[in-house]
Image 1 (cartoon, one colour):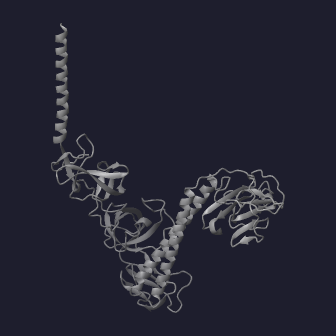
Image 2 (image 1 turned 90 degrees about the vertical axis):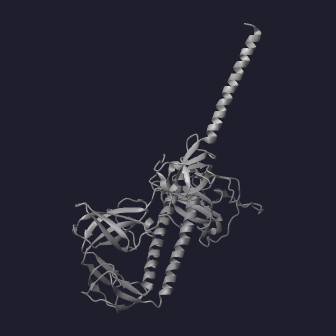
Image 3 (image 1 turned 60 degrees about the horizontal axis):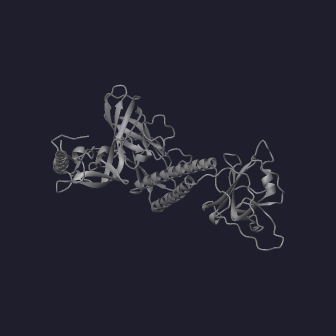
Length: 517
C-alpha cells in the first residue's frame, strides 16, 4: 500500500473518532440539559411527629391519698372541710392569707437566681478542668530563681503567706483520692518542717496540693499548683528552709540585701497543674456539684410554681376524689413534717408513674395518660392529678428514658375502671403537650452536608433544582432529622443522589405516591 493511501486512511480514522467523541459528549450534554428529575412535596416526605413520648409502669390502687402540707411562712386563713367530708377533684380545702405572698415569691425567685449563678460558675470551672492538660507527677524541682520572701503574717484573707507544721489545710483529708488543699498567695512558701511531716509515717503518707489562684480566692483562675506526696521519696530538709510554691524551689536569703527578682507566676519555669488522676477526680466532683445544684434549683422552681398557683386566690384544692381523713389545728399547725390535711381516695382508681425531668415543662396536671393492663390487655385513659415536686428516690418501676436524669412521680386518676382491678400492674405512656403539627422531619438521606452546613436540593420557581441550606434540630430514632428553618411543607425536594440530582437540573413532579429512598 502506498504511503499516500496510508495517510488518507489514518486521517479518515481520526475524523471518524473525533466525530464519535464529539457525538458522545454532545449526547451527554443534551441528556444532562434535558434530563428530568422527579421531585416530591415535603408534606409527602414529612415524618409526622406527635411529640416526645414517655413510658413507665405502675400498680393500680384505690386507696391513694392527697397530703396537704403547711407552707412555710404562710398563715392559714380558712379551712373549708372537716374530717369525714366527701370531696371531689377541684373542691377547695384550705386558703392562705396572701398578704406576704409577693415578698415570699420574690425571695424564692432570688434563691433560683442564686442557683443559676452558682451553676454558671461551676460549669465554667468544669469546662476549664476538661480543657486542662495534665502534668506528670514529678518530685520537687530545684530552680535558680530566688523569689521574694513574703510578709510575716500567716494569711492574707483565706490564702496562706507561708505554711508550717501547724497550718490547717483549706480542705481535703490528706489521702491520695482527697489530698489536702492549701490556698496560697503568689509569694507563699512552705517550711521544710511541713514537707518533712508528709513522709513521717511511711505506712500512711500524706498527699497535698498547694494552689495559687487569681485574687487569692478559689473562685479565681488557677495560676499555679504544686502537688507533693509523702511517698515520692522526698529527702529530709532543714526545718527552717523555705520552699516557694510558685517555683517549687528553695528560697535562699540574700547576703548583700540586694534586690531579689520576684518569680513570674503566669509563666513558671516548670510544669504547673494537675496530674491526669487528679483532674479526673476534680472533674467528677465538679459534675456531682453541678448535678446537686441543678436538683436544688429544680426543687426551688417547683416550689415557686406551687406558690404561684396558691397565690392566685390563696386556695388549695383537692386533687383526688375521696374522704377527708385528717384536718390539723389551725392554731398549731404541725412542725414535724407531717401533713396538715389528708384526703383518702374513694371513687375510681389511681395509678402512679414516673416522669423524666426533661419533660417536666412539657407535661401538666390534667393531661391524659394511657394505661394498658398486664393481665387483660385492655386499655384505659387516666388523667394526671398531681406531679410531685421532688424526684423519686428509687427507680425500680421506671420505664425507658435517660438513666442520667432525675425522674418525678406523678399520680393519674382512672374514672372508667370496668375490667380493671385494684392491685393490677399497667404500662403507662404519654406524650408531651407541645404542638408539633407544623414540624418537619425528613429522612436523613434527603439532607446532605457541605462545609459543616446542611442542605437539600429543592425545586425553584423556574422548574430547576437549587441548593437550599437548612437549619437542623433533633433526630428521631436515628433515622429522621428535624428541619428547623429553610424549608416549608409546600416546597418540593429531590433525593440528592444520582447523576441527575444536581443544581440546575430540570424537574418533574413524581406520580402520586411515588417516593424514592
